[in-house]
Length: 340
Image (cartoon, rainbow, N blue to C red; front, side, top):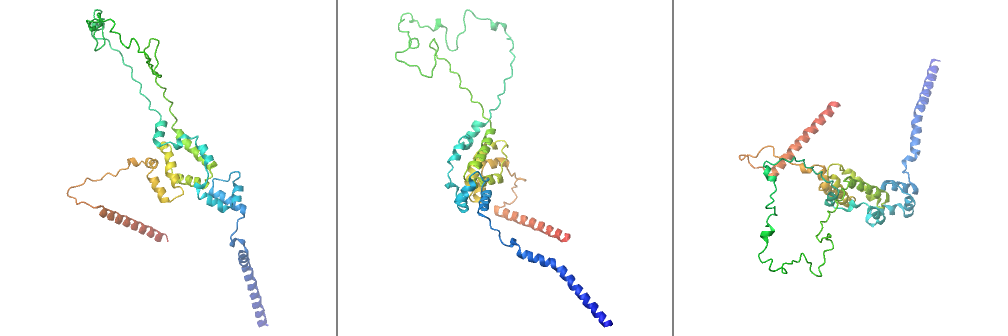
């Protein structure tokens, strides 16, 4: 009886263990079967409309009215090839809008000349008139009236034979020659003497902020109306990467040439060419205060010290940099070991 009871208890405990194991393993089996049947393992394919919307959101500033239908008609592959060749796209409509912004095609010296505000003119300080020390200096000499410098009085300057030849003393100034015509731009008074021409009015100074404003307007016009959307997206990206503060002194006059001559020619080319053009750009050099950059010698050269060649100095610099890098890496490794 005891053996039968022991065997029954063992069989009951074994069945209980099997049931408990099945209950525990059932969620894992369900998860594995669901993962095997899940569609996430297969790459999801976009519908044709989704492909068009995707390429417009990636290669442009956003879909305009009519862009979706145009790309769907010409196919996504043809649209991508067209954007990769921006010179083949017609931009006459955009050029007509950009002509209203005159500073875009101006050279930098012309922009500086026309848009630099005039310097304020210092007003002269009032001078107090002092009284003469000699009161007789203000007494007019009626016997000998003052004459112009270099000229004698009429009585002394007259020739002795002037009364004998009255008909020969007529000059061309009193009697104009026949057939002589006065210049068209010379105005004369009623007495025949030429009148002084009034000076031309000074043109009003232009607002220097208009240089940056027109550059911003051009960026907005290109983003909206240009068909070279990928090209304009890359220009905007690189100008944001090599950013220059427009309100830093004279940089406002240099940003137009920076956009026209530095970024745009190399926006879709080699990065090395773009980097070199940016490093030599006057706008970037001025923004980084390169004109102040100088490396003075810390110690004066001594006559007794031996000359050091450039190659030797470069080797010394490389060795010091390598030692600093090695020591820094060792410090980082030790810190990690201590953290563990």
